Length: 399
Image (cartoon, rainbow, N blue to C red):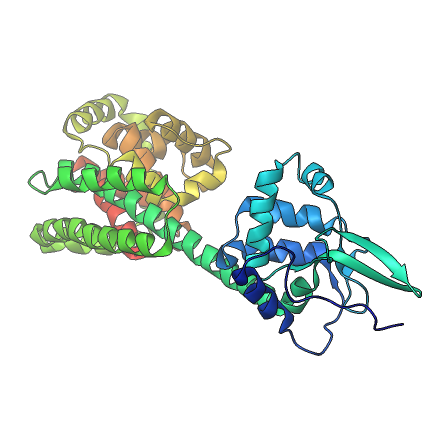
């Protein structure tokens, strides 16, 4: 009596195509796979659903069907045929309409994840004959036999998702740099094609709000890389036009400042000047503020000098926020009140704050932050210092 059950090849009342699908499903490996957790298998299939051409609703229906299997695992040694009615299936699928349920059921069968085991009259039921259970309905065994394939496709889907996410982040960073370079270019090199770069940055921002495939993101990233390289080239030309001494100072400002500031006597003299001649300092400050260069774009500063964000609990939204953050962080750096006041007077609060942000990026390389800032303040009074060039040098170094 043990083998008296028979699984028919032809589904009840089905087309020739359905018969072919049934035949394919029957051609499974002869060895029995090990038992697997049905919900873990469903999770893997959910990740890989696109490669099986399945929708979210197809997965919802499969989840409902799996709930009719009494065990937590799918075991080839046991019957994997379930036989719920259409009404019960629809109820467990969240009230899905019967016509909708049948459509998604056909998709699961077509994908080779289910097999119809129809009775002679097409009804679904189970009965026992001589102690053996014979069931007609939906056979879940293809899920078990294709578990390896499902897991492999899920890994491929995760890898694609990770690559897509990383490429989206790269495109977003390139777009941000291009927008900041366009803002900077209008100040430093007005004749450049900055409007075109700004337009590209805005268009890209709009595109990145949508869900894009890997190929589209690769194309966007290539276009942005080319634009950023072109935009950066304008500043390379500007750097070449500077005098050799200025260029040397900008490229090696960190190391030269250390040599310049080794003398403690220089700091004491500066402190005495601040104490003994406040009126003279005030006049110099007013002259410096009148001739100070414009600060770099805020987006460029925040995008290049990320260390400042480590010390601020709230996001910095504007220049006032950056100046407040710099005022709060400055005592932690060892820079004296007088040195900070002098820098803000000579450069302006925005440029001084941008300068402090740039210093924080390379803080471990600066032996004397207070002395270094005084050195930059002196250059600012002489009209030879630009916090914009300082930040740009950091950006080129990071690239």
